[in-house]
Amino acid sequence: MLYLSNKGDTFGSGDQQYGADYFKDTLKESMSGYMDYSKQSRPLRMNFKILLSRILPYLPTDTPQSMLDVGCAYGYFLDEARKLGLSVHGLDISESAIQWMEKHLDIKGTVGLSSDAPNGPFDLITAVEVIEHTHDPHSFLDDLYGRLKKGGVLVITTGANDTLIPQLIGKRWWYLNPPDHCSIFSRSALKKLITDKGFNILEHSLIPYHWVGFNNMLLKVARIFESKRLGWFASKLPTLVVPIFHFSTQFLIAEKR
Figure 1: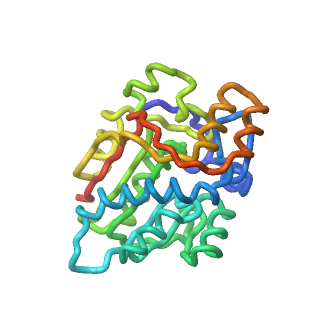
Figure 2: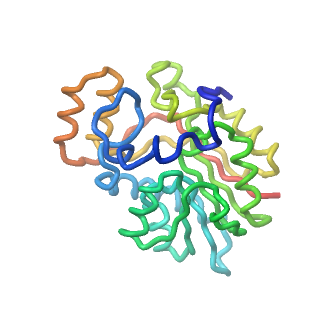
Figure 3: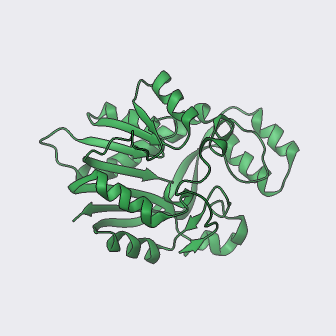
């Protein structure tokens, strides 16, 4: 496991770092943030539907299932899960994201792992592209463990730094962008951490591709090369959805012992 930053609270600097600008920025010095998260709804929902198709076979079908999505952002994942009959709640460090979700999707959410956050226990807890944002992944997983039912399912996705793409492009790999991303894992490191925390791993594989908005992808390229012109051009493009094959994101499903 690689720590890019070890300062601050478990979830970084809160709404200062993950405020409204994080979800609506055009060009920043880091790789953080999105072109306009609300306009990335289509590719994000396409990815979440694929994830749900892989998760649901691990959940019982005879009783209603409850889901907590940690790092829920605008709640698109929860909205897709709700359509399939799950009882959902969102949690995010960004107050502005929670407000957007509650206003536009009518899904309840909580800011941070505070005393106001629901303790559950939940049947399913998801943390999609979240654990790399934590300064203390050990405490993060301990907290999720406590909110999950015995036999409940935990889903983690994050980068895998032992795959081909990060080896080829090095520091330009999009997961290597502190202070936004603090903790980076190889597949073996994540597997050990999860099992040490009291989980049995049910599935651990690589996600071959993601659907992305071409303009948002172009924005990240602009940041890599510090090109404001390219960033401006990307901001003017419509959201054309394209698949990006990279095999550098790991997908892990585990069961609480």
